Image (tube, rainbow, N blue to C red):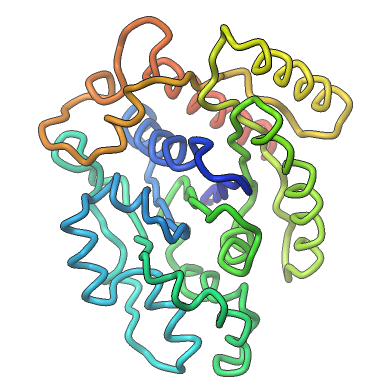
Length: 291
């Protein structure tokens, strides 16, 4: 059985994509899991980080992105082919990882976002069922499916939630980045009423771009921990992903990267150690929730 997790925050620039890609790579390399990343964010950052800009352009021009899937349902056309659109060897690690796959996004998503509500008129399905119908026969090919959602709770994000078991909220531990957490939780609860089966649950909040010497970060973490203790949040992950210059380097699709330590750094308090710990925490919590 696959574990499907949507990664969501209403605010951009909180490390959502960095966490998505890093978790995918650590799960694939260190835990030997079969992983699929579904990039629903029109910014295509996860896509470019995993296959590079040249390969993304080729696939975008060939209609092998999720934009083509949603556009088909709006225009009543049949151009998208799931088997051809899944990229089956991704990441710049070791020249590509056979067990890390990708469903790529497209900048063209922006062109049709306002039209998505009309999908039911042409496709005769609910707008948030598009992705579910497309991937339902593929999910069990993977141990983990990680969905990089856009920074909103619109129809595209709802498509991700509709196939998810859990959702994860990365947030910089400051007021602006955590302000929308109650809204996310409330909106997902409302969305659960629309789902035909199961509910998507909050797996937890992950502190990202953390700086230990910033007092407001530590104050916010104490507040989030108290909310978790009071049952307002499922949990605050123990792992804190530090603010590090290596994060920008890791997001680049550079050739010749042969280890996770080389990509994420192996010095003290490094991204490597943080993401190693985060992946282990995530696996533990998923196992605990399933038992």
